[in-house]
Structures are given as C-alpha cells and as structure tokens.
Length: 285
Image (cartoon, rainbow, N blue to C red; front, side, top):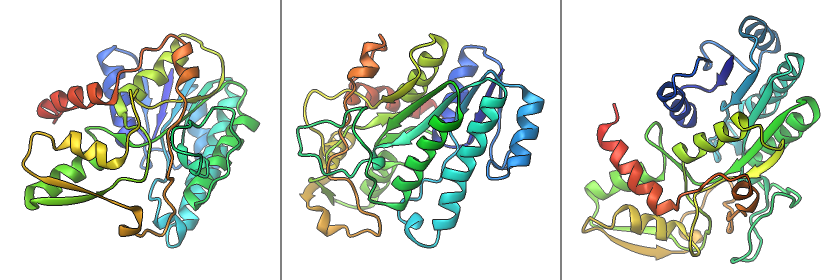
C-alpha cells in the first residue's frame, strides 16, 4: 500500500491525481489525518496502513516566516516530522521518497556551474537548514529511500510563481522581476512522475536532483517573460536588492540532472512543461 503525507499540498495533490489516473490504491493523509510531528500518531497510522511505499510530501515551506515567527513550526515539521516518518518507514520496511530543496546549498556557486548530487550542503536559511536536517534523518533512519532535491516548483494546486505573475498581470501594465537569481522551474507533474518512476522501477536508492530541463541559463525574469509572453505586460529586469527578504535567496539554484537522466527518465524542458500546465489549468477544478 502507498501512503502519502501532505496529500493536500501542491505536490501531494498532483501526485494523487497521477495515481488516480493509473488506478493505483493509496492512503492520502494531510495534517487533519496525520500530524507528522506526533510520533505516536505517525506510528499508529503506519501500523494501520502498513505501507510498502511512502511519499513524504508534507513540509513547511514558508521560507521567510521560517526565519522568525514560523521557526519552531518549521523545525517541528521539517525535522521532527521527517524523523518520525523515516523511523516508521524503517519499522515497516517501506521505501521512503523524501522531497528536499536547492536551499540545502549556499546558492553561491558561479553561474554556469550546476549543483551536483554529491556537493556538500551548506544552507544559509532556516528553511534550508531544516530540510538538510530532514535529509540527514532520512539517511540515518530509513533503510530504503529516495531523496529528491527540487526547486522553483509550479503547478495547478497551490500558490506559486506562475499564478503570482498571472494575477499581477491582471492589474499592472509593467512588472519588475529579479534577473540575478538563476535556476530551473519544476512542474509538479514532472516531479510526481519522477517520484513514482524511481519507486516503481526500483532505481538505485539515494539522492537525486530534479527540475525541468533547460537549454540555457534561466532567471526568474526569463521565467516571467515566458509566463506572460502572450500578454501586453512589460517586464523589467532588476537585481535582488530591489526585493529584500528575511531569508537569503540562492543566486544559483541550477542543479545537475545527470543522475536523474541516467535512470532513463525523460525530462521535458520547462517551456514544454509550462505549455502542458496551461492546458491542464484550463480544465482544472
């Protein structure tokens, strides 16, 4: 049986729709059914479901709030919660798929170079620190695991950069978007398909990086231009200094996809993914 945590989030919802399309049985849990910070509750749910595969999508992702007001909750969910899930997965000999982030790195690698799966994490934010501690908990306690680092996630089922740009474009003739933060967008559908691909094809356990493919360097400005290319909105590139934030944003989030591609998984470009996303968006509930 498959168990999903964080099943009502942006990725969890995408994953549920994917499994529904394939007529696969699963148990979907979110905080109302499973508080992952409560070890007793985690153990009880695992004992009832007896999962052989766990997609751990539950996470605290409010990057700026994690620096202060959300610091305790960020740690409780991303560290304590992940440790509880990893231990329970090990007890039931279940394969664990854990989602991590580019924020585990310092983001300061020169533009044009990619973060390798083997690079040593050095997070500079509370969010990144807790996700890295979550990685360590998975590696320590789970016998069989896939840790997938991703970045710049967008999809139909939650707040993300695509919807932000679309909404701003409704009321603004001009927009300013940072042009000195580099990375690759990741469609939740591509990510969900990769998660299931690894588990179902019993690929080598360990760490992977996954985003959509890009033929050349991408910034948030480039992403915004593609999102709004069929509108009359003017987009102006600016530096990160124009948008100060509590949590330091990585200047380079571009991760190597070599290991992911070596599995045989075909990764569409982010432009192709965005086109497919738009098709689904029109028919989404």
